[in-house]
Length: 276
Image 1 (cartoon, rainbow, N blue to C red):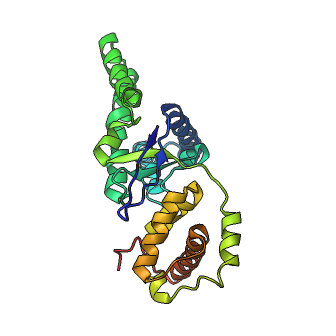
Image 2 (image 1 turned 120 degrees about the vertical axis):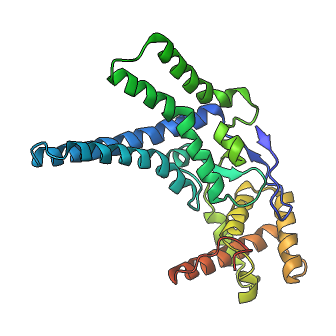
Image 3 (image 1 turned 60 degrees about the vertical axis):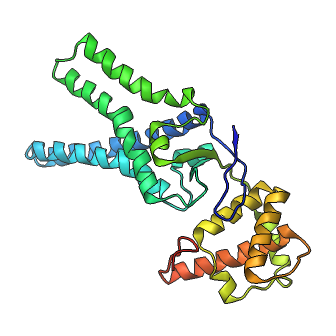
């Protein structure tokens, strides 16, 4: 399940893909969370219906359906468009979404991969639900709907990269991103802060995407990757040899993170080095 993910800077991150079991676990955790929210929303709607003595039932039903549609789609989209590129379920399972070309994960890719879930799962299940509610469902229709849902549901089991149809269209991977503490590295970076001082121009060279890439490199702890990244940064800034690639990168990571966080306080968000 190991794959090469080469960033635009030429750094091979050497990532590990999520297994089908991990992805199913993350989805089930997200589904449980959405069901809990839906139950609360339904109870509030019923209380509103009781308070109005049954008036506005059609409006309430439309509102409920619209809320369910927004929940099951925009929950995934908004969470994966965030800096951690993962829903709560993926975070618990130690997963995140990345672009297969090594570039920044775009909003278009996130929207495409998640809207496909409507066709993959929700459309056939909703159709079966409506048919069952109207007593118009038969055996052939049931088998067709279940077959359609199972085809897409188990599709990741039949390709080596464990991709959904949405991942194929969006050009994304779901990878292992276990939470590992950087406390020791950051303490080392602060200790070497006096050795590695960076100018405002050097810290303005990169954005959030590069910061996340640098964090992945530090977490992985691969000497070759750290050497390649350190060389790229040093060549860009005209910095000579350093005593420790890891110490240099950790110091730059800490300085860049503090600068980006300081800018966010003033409402300035820089997505990557191309965002001016």
